Length: 368
Image (cartoon, rainbow, N blue to C red; front, side, top):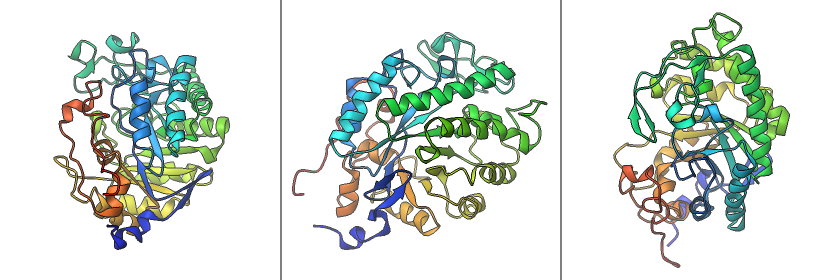
């Protein structure tokens, strides 16, 4: 039986996002699941996985690298060759056939890479190594010191992001999300702990935001700002990031991009009580996607609905959920009807390849 209160909630109202009108405000967050080929080509299994979840208002597909040196981990997707475009086209065609819509997240790993995976020494704003081991085809190994990016490296990386965005459109995506979060390259430029440059890309906040702004502008110039989103995660310390001055970075970054006409800003690990989140909502004039912090050990019994509604009440326009969509291909239906949700069976299965723990989660029977 339909839960009337849930069905009438703001969560299930249509909403505009860039060139799209989403049927509701629940979108699938990008989730790296290492199901691509070693060369980064999406597989038929991935087409099945995403098509199963096409009832999401929007699917933001997993992080894809814009160039070879930006690769982070084994068997992640890429978007810098014709084979990558063709592989992703099979995915977007499958999702579109089920009535869905997709953006692609573009991610450069920066120092979060390894020669054992990419065959290349990673690049970063400064030669500061990841302070932990990193997963490679040979298992977890010590990280390496990245090569500091030159002016030529920066220019070529900007061009690679723009080219990757064009490839994504050619692959059938409605748009792209630039990954500026979670300790990867753009975040490394933003953070004082990883950016020790003394040129125009380092030092004061106004310089440290420059690379992120230029990436977003290059991508927007290539495919149109209405097809571009940006993801940030203020204060996030994953991958050894130490921002140092979070309260200054994000007002400056968003101020530089506020009039750019982007499709959305996506805040990861969003907390409606956090003053930084509240400031972001106040400063950002466009659509705001918020990704709530859910318990690590289990998906809430309501699938995350209460967390979502708190963020909507705090000014978010759209809610991005990750693990709930992984374990529940029909999450939207379950949340609309109040049906029980599946739990993630084994976190290990999320990254090991194959159908188990990926495309074999049960859906509700017809009419349930």
